[in-house]
Image: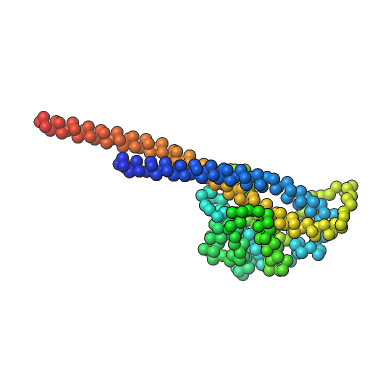
Length: 295
């Protein structure tokens, strides 16, 4: 059994840790509220834009001439991995990293062997892991979470879209955590490019009796809306990941605080047992000494 000093030092250490985790939980909860409001307010707009885009593509039913829906052989693959800049958020980062690597190995095994799978890392944790393990990261950014705006995410989206249009990459996937609630994050791998116009049309079928008048033409509106929709969808994935991060961190810190509280209870019991044992030993020594003197 540990002595009283060791137990006392450990209790102080655990109590200090509990204070830190409790404070981090409150900070994460405050940040989560703001991030959750942002993603909840954006989703209806992004979904409506997808619905309109699907309706237009359903009435036109063609991918020809669309820069972002080119059907070509998938030789060069770009995976966008979204993680956080900091840890202490449970399996949030590790799950996203594993999904990206596993997806590359399973879905694009041939391209991986040929060295034709590259990464864009958004977030320090994902970037550090990829570079440490020798994966090809062509671009990384971590300061976007310091001031997360649509304009800043658009710069990254435009870069990725240009890679695709120029033919540098034939397929782009985004791996991120989709926000459901504070305790639930859905690991998601989403195709960013090329756009599947037929899938959009199937998801947003237009009633046959509805005939809208479009000004300007439907083709023109479609060509204008597609890049805007892509930028909006990209911004939504980053907001989803950002809210998920704070939800995961709040949950992790809540569990850590509860574990520290339970450990303090166990240490208090162990301390009392050790103190009682020490007192008993002292009494035995005193009694033994007294009997020796009397003898």
